[in-house]
Length: 373
Figure 1 (cartoon, helix red, strand yellow):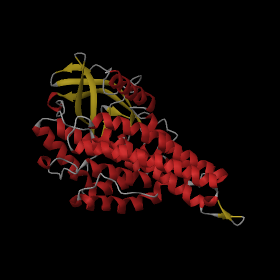
Figure 2 (tube, one colour; figure 1 turned 60 degrees about the horizontal axis):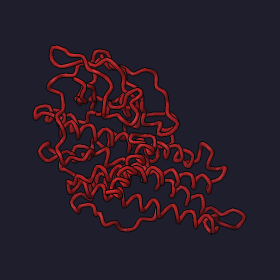
Figure 3 (cartoon, helix red, strand yellow; figure 1 turned 180 degrees about the horizontal axis):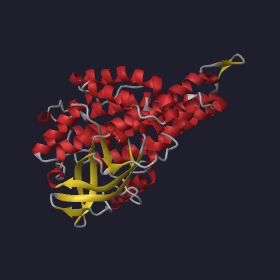
Figure 4 (tube, helix red, strand yellow; figure 1 turned 120 degrees about the horizontal axis):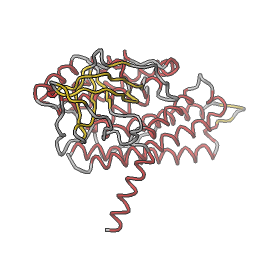
């Protein structure tokens, strides 16, 4: 896909990590279709990312990492998503959960989770609940008091990469208020038969059942620092941007084919529609990069900006994928075509919390309140 220079630059000393991600992603692309068809978690790819040192490099320096920037996070996620969206999504969830536990835990537990990430252990977010919807941070499940903390009996939904997870970032309600814990998977945790999704099938997003799972008091997380920007929130938009890039690349490949002596790429309507979509994707990229820049400057505006960027990126990914289907024609519906998979994957971002309708409502409220002030 055509790319223009951005005012948000990757720090020079971090460029090697972006280059490494691009090198790995090129190999990941070869299994994207097969992983989707089999709804198979791309565990080998995720292990390769960990073995490269990339996971641990995002940890704070005090935890043994390199404190890589949010700008680099966004570019890595976008690069992975353009090649294998499920890898990008599961990796972002894994890294976000680990980073939150290292950042929000007491020193001894923070050190433990940092060491576990560096050793290649897997993390996942167990936050969404039945009927919880977009209010996934406000748990509706009460933890039961226990001798050394609490226990949880209930379920969590849409936990990507959960069956390979060693540790979970989990929320419950204690005394009517939200509480977050680091939980190590044990025999009180089980997985019912999976309800496969239409798109992003290789994330193996599924339900987890908890039956008296211990929530140890020392594993209870404290509040995040006031200037902390959650990696998943900042990175979400870049998943959709990578999918949009893949859609435009697939569109260009189909449009370049010669049929009856003519190329679709020379048709006015194809060029015009492609130009419009590309500018929208570029605009969404700038919004996402702005959110990353705000996070890197520790601005309190980073998280609201990330809501705005996810909203637009989700929508333009769907639009780019829909145009690829239109240009690809009947061939784009064939299982052998990457277009049909890209189209299905493009729908996922808009459904993930915060969903597009919810985000639109929130952002619209901000706009109207600011205009009325």
